[in-house]
Image 1: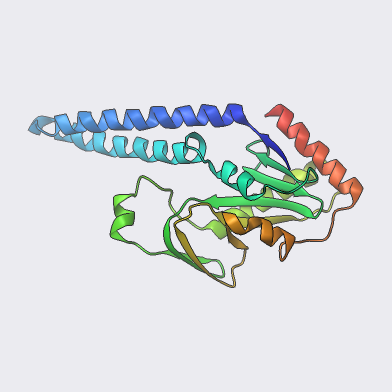
Image 2 (image 1 turned 90 degrees about the vertical axis):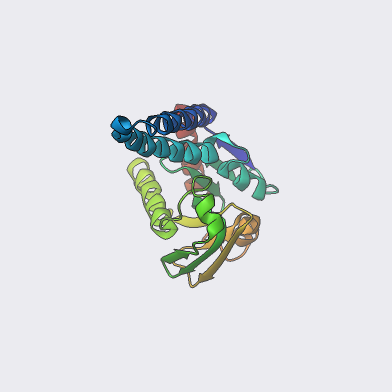
Length: 231
């Protein structure tokens, strides 16, 4: 399998995450010191808000761009074994993670959520536990993966259509939980919900779409490669 990764962007955002984490810690220390002085109570409160905000951003950035294995690395590992007709793109197109293969185009939406998660159709719920509260800054929020996945597929489709008006390839959205501690219970999900280990099996089975024509595949590969060169 071919892999194109925007290493420059990933390193830049990873550094920003590190800076934000240290800055958040420093601001929290300032807030703690200020809390000992009654007249500086407002400074302490402001520092706590700013410090936690920076810490949250830093943690999010580091998990996505700074720590290994990153989401893109997890997906690449799970796809090992595919031949060079498959091309995975990370952070070089309008959406973060894209797979182009002879059977279609897929846009991956990832979650690093641990613990119990349920989805019924497009309705998501995560169980709040003491452990999750204690690790609130160590993992990203769940949000609505279905909405994010459909939006990613739509943005990529719009991009393709703007560049290749005659190409009618449908972008397939996929939701992937990359955290091995995730326990996901899916009931008739609107968008396929997978763990990293099952991506390859799903693509070879239920994830198969109509095979792309040679001309369509070539046009998409050229378009995506051009985006990689500009990244």
